Image (cartoon, rainbow, N blue to C red; front, side):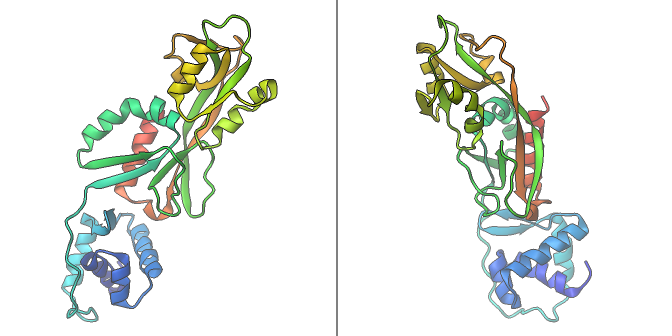
Length: 274
């Protein structure tokens, strides 16, 4: 830590609990507070604060500097009424991802993840959410992220193929599209769209779409890991080649050292490692 101004900034965030309140006490903008904290964290290679509900909680690394700052009073407004500390909320990680990735790749290991992290709540959304605007901490997607100030990494890939019911006699007469809002379905359905025209059914429910394929002469694109569990589905055409789609994870660069974000990324990478 290079100077008293940095120590004073860390002390203010710790005492007030929010960036905006700390900024007001120091006569700075919230953006300046955030930028300087991020720079301090990068220089130290340690997370200084983590978000807990509406407040920022100092990490053990920050407590060292807070204790040092509290021994120095010059320049810090000691006569102001500090915001009372609210009870800390449960740790929550919010993530958005396509339903099929959640079902087939993350779900098998989610129980062990929650057991190993008893103080953590995992909020998973299947609609598109923005990392850049703080709607989620982590986004998993088929599309490579292109929002500003994001850190992105490739987690792995998901294999897809076309399937029909094993009871089908002859060739299918149409297809079913599973819409996951991540534009993957548009890409995967191009060949079927050329062959059959518009889908007979568009649905966001995998279970419903598979049920329809069981009862009608229709074809559907599915992750191979999911289709392998459906004993009454078979490849169509039989010589069909698997298509692989890359899967990406992204988070805001200001959360690069956040231990909960790191924990979520480790879990995601573990899910894709086999």
